[in-house]
Length: 222
Image 1: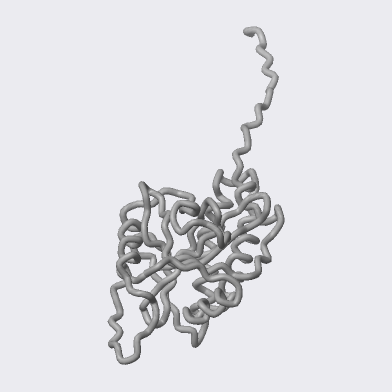
Image 2: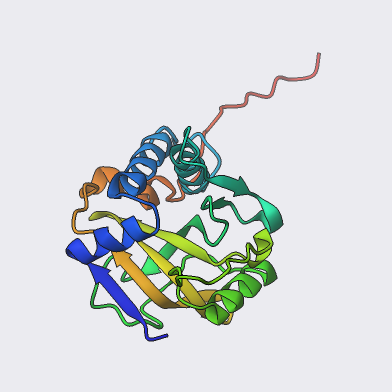
């Protein structure tokens, strides 16, 4: 399948085909950002980034598992999937680097996962690359795969001094330990997360230890 990037109205329509609306993306990102900003220099280094990742997945799940929406979830192999009611695909939030949210980015190499990934993600990406397009074919019997076989979209996000960038993309290959090749990208027309207040990366900057001088007075022996 040829790589494709959906933007503008086309991106919204592609989301609808997946049973999603833009608010399903905006809401978990917004709530996760608010939680990450509660971190301070007194937290463990990297706490803001970890909080954002965990909470973004949690809040997306909460959004999609509401009554009558019917999505489910799995933590199998430590991949935080939220699974469509059909069982035919899943979504997981993943931190990224590079040209996230830029429609002119190359389909391979310009965007990659921020952190190295292990064998479980490597197998997931390989299976994604072997899957057929995620559209129903009339009259075709749908086989629901095991959770570890489900094609999985990455809700990619990246923060910097300009704010938070994001897109929903289907990974299909990796080089070394980084996922960096995408078959399909969905870039929404609006980004409400502009500005330095959404720079989660800044919150994770290492704070140098502060040296404290404590005067010590030695008394003579009694």
